[in-house]
Amino acid sequence: MRSAASFIISLWLATLSLYGISVPQKYPSYAYVLSEFDIDESYAYNREFENYIEEHGTQFSALYRRSLQRGEFLLPMVQKQLIEAELSDLLAYLPMIESGYLTDIESPKKAKGLWQFMPSTAKEYNLTVSYSRDERCDPVNATTAAVFHLQRLYRKFGKGYLALMAYNCGEGRLSQAIREAGSDDLAILIDDRAKYLPGETREYIRRILLIAMIGESEVIDFGPVKEVQTKGIVQVEVKGDTNLKEIASLLSMEPATLLRLNSQYQERILPDTSKQYKITIPYEKMILFYLNYPPAEEEVKTPKDHFVSHIVSRGETLKIIADDYHATVSEIKRVNHLQNADVEEGRLLIIPVTEAKFESVAHQR
Image (tube, rainbow, N blue to C red; front, side, top):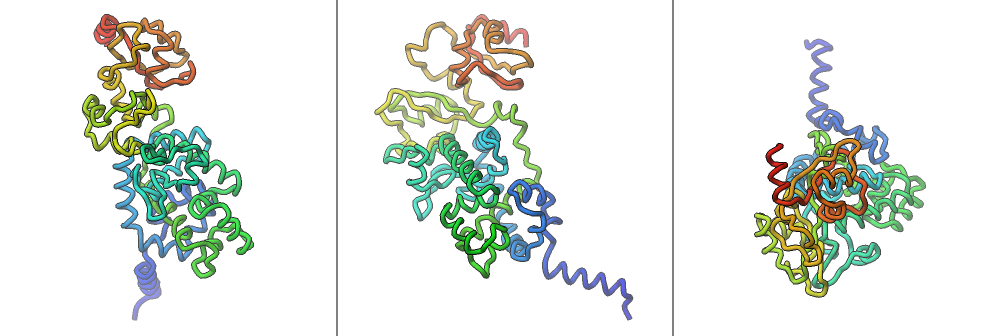
């Protein structure tokens, strides 16, 4: 006859086999993720959520890894914009669900780009949508629009999980569901029996929570904000009618990589309707760009065709840095796309210098 202890162990194993490992056991980051989206920790034990994770965990682990690879250059930019807007950086997982960090993907409903904007929403946030140029596919401009949109949703609904669901189903549809349910509680709103919200939206919030818990439990580190400046992407200006494949060659890049970063240009050749266009390149390619791409004639004032890197130290100003390298503040601002003369400690700057100064700096280092 089995002992009481043996019976209890057998019962525990049978329960574990039936329901699988709990959410807190499988994803240690669960409490952090839920709190970032204003969800009570108790939701981790919601039976429908547990079942969803059990069924889809492997699938979303694969999606997370694919998205992480595709978003190698884009994730730091997305996170930086979110942090500057005082939004949770966990919203950087939203494009993983929306597009898998593909910049030109289009849904059957005609939503497009990293953040899957519909044409009407894109125009609301001043994104150009035309045959030759679709800024929904511009990762920088589309992210700026998405951040504004998310800020608006947070202001209107007050809670992170409500903003996420409104992003998917629309403000009016979510407001209607809250009225019908008589509550804005997450578990009530996405109850699969009551069906206050469309099935797509009920699954949408679960998908975001799952992929965020997968990512955070694997200890993603996008790096402190001041280090983001040395990673990711940067925008530079090129002439109209430029072939992006030629730019890729100048940057020693695979054309496909550069094209993915600039898929807003439908023909892969910039329109000739404007003298200058902004394109996105990896930050690490910025020096190569300025070494190899001919600047506009009006910008060529001094023979500074060499570049050095400089990390801003505490107390340094652009004027101090410019004087040290025999450059000008305006030159440094132009090359680094600075809107003003303020630079934070730890930022990486690219400094245009003469050949003599370049050799002097290289010798000192």
